[in-house]
Length: 224
Length: 256
Image 1 (tube, chains in turn cyan, purple):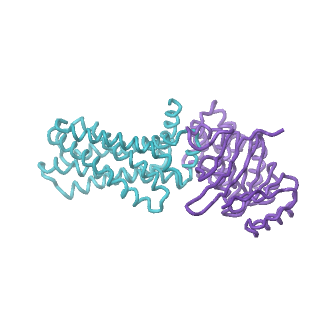
Image 2 (cartoon, chains in turn orange, purple; image 1 turned 90 degrees about the vertical axis):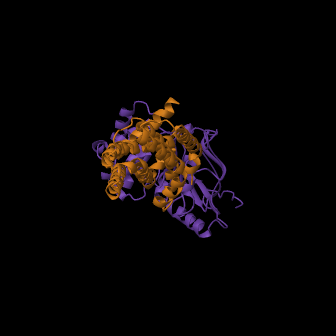
Image 3 (tube, chains in turn red, orange; image 1 turned 135 degrees about the vertical axis):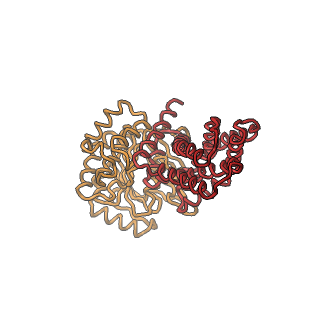
């Protein structure tokens, strides 16, 4: 298990190092999320009453679509340069490639969210910053990234991968996005998680199911 | 005395939908043996190497590495394989040293730093070890790809048309390096389009036509002229009524 984790860490570190050199993925995700946040902020001019109701939806739309941009690149980069074969040749259970890629995507999307979140609070004149949001955002992000990484590997082999990925991912992510929006809305209106138990359970269940199913099926997805 | 087989295929079939890329390939290579596989485009050379490397799952039959089936399991058996394709499998934005360090970690290479320095030195890349791979010439990248494949000291080396896209000088350099480094007691399978190259490398030579090994012989038994004639006959015959020439032999055809 230790050897497995060391190899997973090597792939994650390689992804981070390559991304720091090019900044292709992070810059496109960040610019997209910034544009969405700014455009909605100026277009809606929300009254304080409406902000708590609408802002969570806008926030998660920005996160979901920025995530799709990054996910699209994660396997496309490996496929275009054929380096995916290099990973597949390694003496590592193929689920390790999935786990590493999922963690890389999680790191990149979380980095974008860490920049967008405070900005969002300022632009939408949200008063208090509930600390629990720091727990909710990673839960929702994992629910997007776990199936997204699997579908990104699937669609990397297709010509219309930029279109195919959101078509596959968004319908499956509906429960995750709805639960994330509901919990965020509850946090904004009451500053606490009371009453969010059901949504949190749904989020956690989706995360577990998506990760387990993806780990089990990834080897077959990699094969032609 | 029989040499124990390092890598072996048993009735290997690979189909993509209704198209059969390999139609029952039986092949066995002992330790230190070198086989050069020639064949036209679409003969199944790359598919055969991908199956041998564990990159593609056979539709039927088996690939055995040291007597154990390659597909399935934790992938630990793949540690014994080094694979060089016409694509380099390298990361353009990382330096040669970073690429080798990354692959070294995947293969648990001991004394990684010294091994990376040694390989980069041996392959004449020491001066460019800190430049991004994308700035290297095609020949340098292919040498680096060879370093990547040799890094973990595999016992089986699979080379899929490693000379593709190289000029004559780079081809000669790579060929010399392959002979010097890659064949030190390793089992080598090399595919190529180039008949003179095919005659210079390895201890055995085989012709793959339409997914079948149509002809096989020991090296040193054919001149280039004879090989060219046999090759032309085999390609022209499209594996129908394949003539037997030289001291090579036609292999049994799969029923498909």
